Length: 267
Image 1: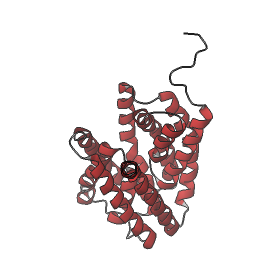
Image 2 (image 1 turned 180 degrees about the vertical axis):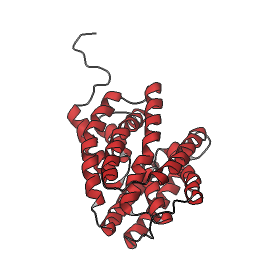
Image 3 (image 1 turned 45 degrees about the vertical axis):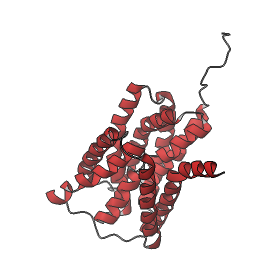
Image 4 (image 1 turned 60 degrees about the vertical axis):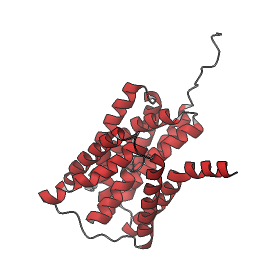
């Protein structure tokens, strides 16, 4: 083979990866989500990565985004560690269960159920924005209940790669009356342990590119911390309206592949 022959899988330009990271960081800081909703489709569409490699790279890149965004919310006092610990424990248990059930559960049904729940939550945020009833009580019973709350969120994320923060933020706001900024900051802290474990597992299995993740995570860290400062200053009504709009987009994207396949078969 000639020395100048093209490689089988050429690496996309670093600028493209950085732009993906910048966009993911905006979502992480502004909405308290991991950013995978941007990273995965961008890597497949713009960089030619297959779905498995894109997901693995996304998991590796989320850690720097979550750390950077959490710092911004911590600085503003908008992270509740007491809530984050039991919720993180529940989501990690759920993610383990989800991985074990991966070959036994109809994923298409789960995607549609999640899309329906996300859309219903979006309607609530869009029609009655800015309503909270105060922070969750920090007693042992209230905090321990967050473990079973986190389990189904983790199961959904483990089975489908969706859910996670986009489910945790509404649960904290609507179920426990936590303010918008506090819910987002706490969600980013909850994401950290699972993202570290997921990155280690994917790197060990050869899923994803550490180099790509470094470009994405490094660039996204800047926008994540910047938009986290912006998020804590947002009016709660505007914050809920923006998050509701994000949930609408996520619900559509979740079932879009199924809709396209149905359209292809009917055509």
